[in-house]
Length: 358
Image (cartoon, rainbow, N blue to C red; front, side):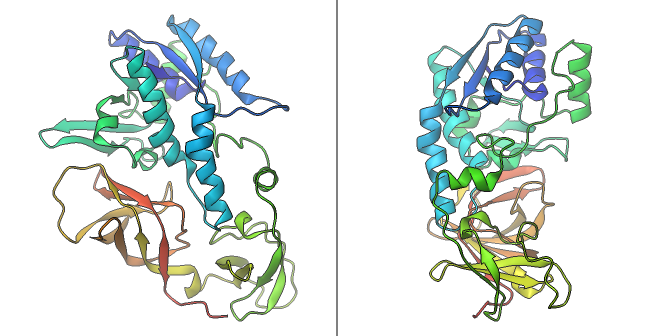
């Protein structure tokens, strides 16, 4: 069973599996249902129909909208309400694609669930190893860091050995109608809509003061949930005549006093030395020492950073070899050793290079 999104990556995944002699069934997942307005899912499902007709495979649609609201969207809102910046894509993979959808696939008689992720799997005597996709610009192992050995045991990533250009070329050669379709970006249930306006429909706005690191009021914010650490655009204070003339950045949030803390220029307050995770999920079955060196990403597409990981009872302390900019609570810290993704967990707190004391 192949999760077909209507895009070129999952289409080529289905193509490759059929060429390898598998019996392939395409399934379009509907994870978001909303009354009124345009529905991009309908256009995507029409693309799934055209892809499946071209590949001559059966296809149908299944809804996991209720599971998505309960397991992913509710968490998304809770995190934003707490002033954090969650990554729903990681949770979507662990709770929907490789749990609800995987359960559906197994009950339907499928042997495996395949997706169009740019990632690879290797199996040996110690179990399954999740590896980066070979295209460094498209590697999606970051979003799969929450998966378990059992989930990966039933997973296939047919395009993980390919470059994006090769995927598009295969699609063109095979007459797949979405060969040149633009890649989707952003959070799936928001789509092309304005993020702030979308969030306002679910969480009440709570405006407050925007202050600098000395406590001086600089302006007003619309609600702490609409801003993230390191943010520069959209603050509405770029035209101020006072100060140094440098750009303003978000460097912190005071939840108790509803203050958004900003600073001109990129100074120490924007950087951190370490982070804590209250929950560390490890994919690997390798025996790891009480403290070990590896690489980490604190956000998707970030180059690997050297770190020392010190596991705690349930989570870990991750110490940086080099000070890191705008490490954000709520995002995932994903650990690597060379090309292998070891696992990761949501960032709980960070240790700033310089404390902010208003």
